[in-house]
Length: 431
Image (cartoon, rainbow, N blue to C red; front, side, top):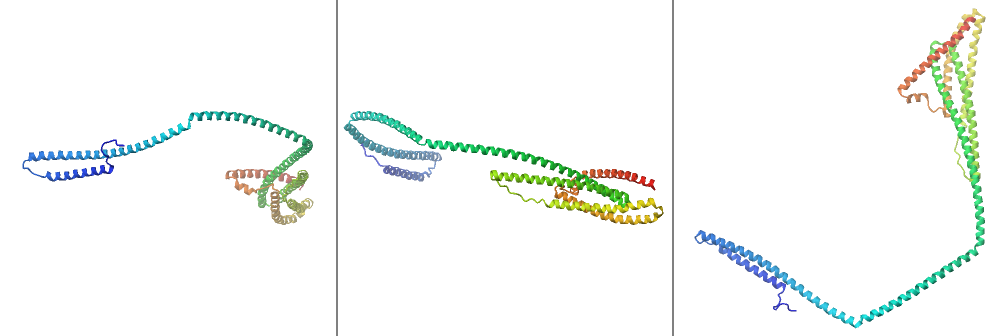
């Protein structure tokens, strides 16, 4: 494919020519530099010659740049020629393949093929319609067969259905009976629970009463301690005897209250145990539920309370015996005035013995107090001591309590003094 008259140069040849030209230009530039240095003797000429040399050097540089550009352009031209050659080759191949395709198409006769394809498509559509109709018929037949099978199974299992119906009815009746029994048991449990709540409320009332008694007991105890200190300084038998009588009466009263509370608590415990046993038996019989019984120790507290009551009764008997000999000398005073000196001696001895007995009685009273506190604590009526409560209270409350105690002691002293004066007046009249 000769587009140009002369032969084309290859890329390597073009590059070699450019390199040779660049070397020749460099050699000429070196020679020019060597010739620059000369002296003509005329400075103006020398200046002009140097200017001309400078212009020539600039032109040489421009020529070098142009030569480089032309070398680049020649390289690009070579590349374009190669690209054109490649495109010509591909075009020739495409022409050959196109001619072959045209020959094949002409040999096949496409019009006849289209006609045959259309005929086959029409036949396929007709067959599809027939196949769809046959499938619809098969579906209808299968549905009818399924219905027939279901009807046959229904006729076979009618007896079993009747039996199942009877069994279901019996189970429903049993379920209703169980529901009725459960409702009855629930009502009973509610009633029992209400009774227990009432009994617990009564028990709480008794606990409150015992707490009030404990408070009064502590107040009286404080008054008694103060009076005891005063009596130790004065050493008067009558006042001490009256105080001891009052204290014994109070102990009797508290003992009776404790007995009543013990009886009530015992009855409450027995009733609670009986109700719990009944509930457990009912749950075991009817529902099959078994409850674990906790270990409850109840026998210890009543025994301790009995011991305390026995001690209190023994102390009362001893006090009555101690008070009996004190009443005898009073009768003798009215009958025999001559024996006053002897009676005074006996009174001094009895005062000394009374002081010793008072100390012993104080110890016994303290022991009895500690025993009563222990019993009340074990009965869980008292949970704290007065000392603990006083330590927990702030300082201001302690001051107020001390003032109240002092006022009470003053009031009690005044009341006791008036009573003693009233008792002494009739004795003096008798004398």
